[in-house]
Image (cartoon, rainbow, N blue to C red):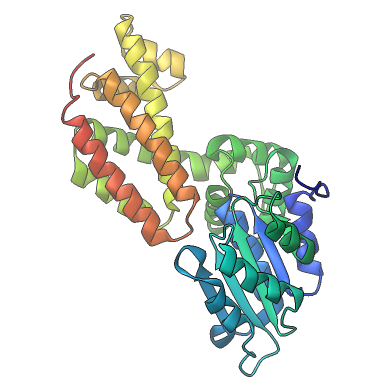
Amino acid sequence: MAPSRKKPKSSLTALSDLKSAPPKPIYLLEGTDSFLRDEYLRVVRRKVFGDEPGDFNHDRFDWIESDASEIIAVAQTLPFMADKRLVEVLNFARPGERDESTFLSYLDHPSASTVLVFCAENIDMRTTFFQRLVKVSVVCRVDSLEGEELKKWLHGRAVELGFELRPKATDLLVEMVKPSMMRLSTELEKISSYVMPGTLAGEEEIREIIGHSKEELLYKLGDSLSQGSLSGTLVLLRRMMETEHPVVFIGVLRNLIRRWTISKALIRNGRGAQGISQVLGLPPFVGKRLESQVRGLGSAYLRELYGKLLQVDRKLKRTSDLKVARQTLELFLVDVRSARSGTHKVA
């Protein structure tokens, strides 16, 4: 049986504590939210380097492509013209026997001039190695914030950006954007560029700034995909990525598929554009647009599209590299276009 662990602090409390405490020799960031992981890493970097660049004393390793001896050799190197060196190990997992021995020797005698950060999605507390690592580390959970904790984070982030959110505006923001911290952060930055400093933003501002732009993207994306225009869809993706994070595209596409699926079912039951508008609560012209879009789409295509979308969503949540995210989306659109060519029938 694995040893019991102390009940972890909430992510928001742990992040606050991290900001106020002096840097420690070893950190373990455990969890699946890449955005929150990067938030923690930014705090640690600021602790280590302050406002100074840390180019000569900042090393990042991907555990998939590295080994313990390489990492520990860098961790034991004295910083160049600075007090501290920062070493980050991404995608960390249980090491093999030789690597484990190297790491355990370092954990017994960590360098006083190095901050070593392990980033792992999951750890196995049944193993001696992770029991030891947890014991000597500052452990921080990096799973997505939810509920009241997410709302507190949104309020604090808005204040950092120079404005405030009314409680109902916060609820609406979460409802419209869905609880992806990366996307929520992107939307907050967009709001801050539209409102005056010190503004107390309400529901009206949220609907105006976020709702309008997303609806327009939704209409154009629906037209492009339903017509089988790969080039048009790629152009929309690239334009959107000039101001938005790639994950926003996933949310827009998920909403579109939902509308298409409901519209398809209504058409089968003999209800056209008017029925679509009534059920979805949309203006009549949108009902007509959706009716036109789905008449050439088969149910099998919609199911396959949604399944592929879920796979891409999982991939995007595992990376903070915008180039990789864009390439993943582009390959998804090519794949969808290929699948559509064989299912372009009215079911």
